[in-house]
Length: 413
Figure 1 (spheres, one colour):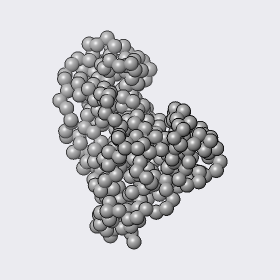
Figure 2 (cartoon, helix red, strand yellow):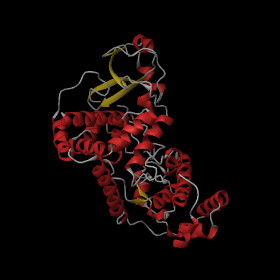
Figure 3 (cartoon, one colour):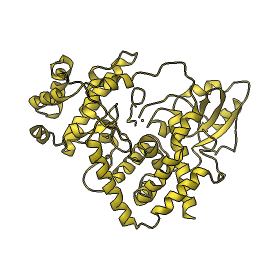
Figure 4 (spheres, helix red, strand yellow):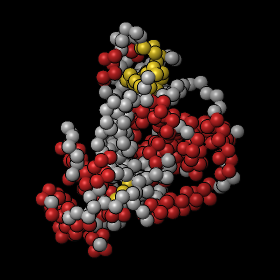
């Protein structure tokens, strides 16, 4: 293995999943569907969540910036070491090297990137088949109604908010620098990392080579099977390149059941494309460096349409007319293409005036048996959906980031 690692040294670049091309970033939930507020201008009343977060903040308040930074780095190293000691599955020891499709893949990758062919074979012989990954990428059975409120409660809750306040305090310098560099507000970065992994607590303990190889060559039957298998083959190739560039044993890369890595749950290909060495140590480390994670998320968003000049709310709640002339507007996809006049003409009435010279998309958040919520969403909202193709996900990011910001501000009073 040591011989293999030494050969793996030179090219770069840790929701998604079955439905999300990202990293996803995590499992994609195509549920369109918030709790009133991501985008309201009036300051909501102080909540019990904020009060609890404030209490947690006061504990850390006396630490100096230097001490906090040291604590973050040490905690990240400890967490990475603990994660490396255990994985979430046993896996089946099959000889992938005997599969013709795997052999063809190894030939192509070796020729394309200069890997030693014999060492590629040795690597494939060590890969495990992960049945749980196959089961987890299968779509959920139909029938259960989508429920935004139930989804939101999983993320907008005291434990995650308090952890977000700590994360913001301990990484205030990196968050401020990312906001200044990329124009993405700190609360959005905090919201994404909190939704993805609870600030590094749950980054996954599957060996990335195992899950990517399994899904690349044994993806379950589905209408999109060919496309998804091709995606995971590409990510397997990217994982090998990433390990070589960072001079690490590829089997030490741990992540989600779909191969997403680190605090922000980037797929290997997105680490190669959008990863940033934000702490300046010469490496892009989304597993152990909170600064690199913060900078990389900001870079991803700016590359996917985040508009730093648009400082208006990303979403504004609206009501819709009984005529349902607005219904076709829901089919416009994950982009803001509608002028405010088009929304008004179709019977969409905003709770507050829509900012001028801006385009919108109409977003519906289904609430099971309760009434659906409707929102006018800007390009910045849809930039978040490029991280995970789900309205629920993007709204949760906005809500969690705002809740953490308010709790932190209250604790500083």
